[in-house]
Image 1 (tube, rainbow, N blue to C red):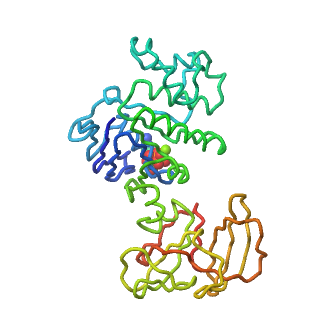
Image 2: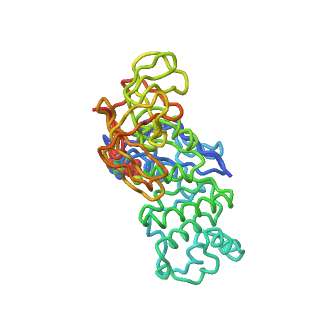
Length: 357
Ligand code: ADP
Ligand code: MG
């Protein structure tokens, strides 16, 4: 069990600053996800941790020992770190057992460690197979078993499931998460997939432009994002201009209580689509249905509010479709988060964010 701390880590590639003073702490025995859009510095962070790159500023400590920074650069093989790459990690000419035992000394190879880690990843009895006799998902399981086998201080996983189809990915990531936990390993998982980060990690570190913008438990990052950008990156977000008076925000969705301390004045509020309720109670506002997208487990309903603002609501009972053009009554359930008005810039384009027209 180890903990890893990066303090003010800077990494430049020529004129590109990939890490601009990143502060990350990885608690021992837990899985920490580093989440951010493409190009934000996730792979660079892992490469610096692994010792594949020399850092240009700050420092990295593993179990309190400085492995990088202040003129020190401990080479990869002396950091006791294992890396699980995206795909193609196995030696094609070696059996599964030989792949897993590759980094072990002779005593460890003769022990039952190989069979033990194969069992952890759900591949007990597969030792004699060759990699080409396995599916893509099974090959990634072997790669994880090989990383765990020598009991490294830290296991680094760089988007290890991104080459697999969605159906396989969800089951595999939970199994890998369980394997790491059962082995007491400390893990760092890099991903651009917010669903993956929120569902498997104990802690989520949100990276943007080489800097950490938020580091917290998955529920905190989702419910209490530090700014509208994080709100939109980690989930679907309805962001509305509002004016706060005495702890409540006046919005196009009615008057909504605001969570946390907030000063009166203009703000941008965050409401999650699942907070929009179809109800005709006091305080509800009228909206026009634009579309109803059925997704099986839920449905997304596009709505236009009286002032023209378009929003999305998520409803669990998606069985009875709402007809486009129809009028409904809606209200926000629970409290909204409020952000200073000027922070609603630079939102990621990939999210279902519907801003006021
Ligand atoms: P991510 O993994 O989050 O997609 P990377 O860490 O790969 O991001 O890249 C961060 C930034 O550094 C990007 O702007 C990328 O183009 C740049 N970069 C990464 N590796 C190199 C390299 N070897 N040489 C030059 N620029 C690089
Ligand atoms: Mg990357």
